[in-house]
Length: 280
Ligand code: ADP
Ligand code: MG
Image (cartoon, rainbow, N blue to C red; front, top):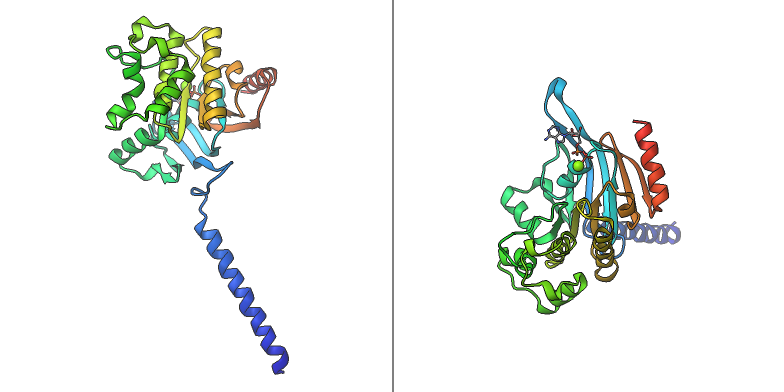
């Protein structure tokens, strides 16, 4: 009957319109472009890394999936040889995986040619190393703005002052690395990593060469960069004390993610390390 078929068809039309809308919503909102709190800045899927071939092959990473949320501090822990450095190098575009893919801030880096990759690292990534890696011939100030100089970009003066103040180096700017303590050198390195406002800051054992007091200062600084500037930080560390400042602690074992927890106390981290090492 006409009176029933017409409304039915209208309902069907409405339903297919709604479906089309939903579909559009869904496909236009990719995993990598979503904004706002909790957005994944780094996304890795099915990562594997094999060193060597045949009998000598070492599976350093086995099918790792991980998302790193914006504005959080994530610590990566695990026994020696568990794949921490390999994972960090691949997430930062310093090494290519054998399988799987990585995106940083919406760009799939595992497909980029070396030139674009170098550019992306320069624009989107900050690094802090265990051994500071400052240029000996440059002053603290010149070291801090080096990433901008290399990119031929000018420092935003207000941001530069904010960063220098945050790391507390106002009165050390003309000193060269040899005239600075280890803790001061690492603070220069933190400032150098923050000056470009990177999408993600990678820190590889940032307190590994520091005593506990100056190491604590550097950790405070990393924590503040997250809380005050919304910086996203990924820190590889052996140190339970360092990992206890993180919002999330990811434990690797034999190239896989063994445990992935929000905020952990130092004692809980110690216990987990012990458990992982016993069950090796
Ligand atoms: P971690 O940083 O947790 O100590 P790595 O990522 O350095 O672990 O190493 C993971 C595994 O891969 C280890 O078994 C290590 O010996 C191996 N490995 C790392 N780099 C290489 C390489 N260049 N060649 C061969 N094996 C490697
Ligand atoms: Mg390592």
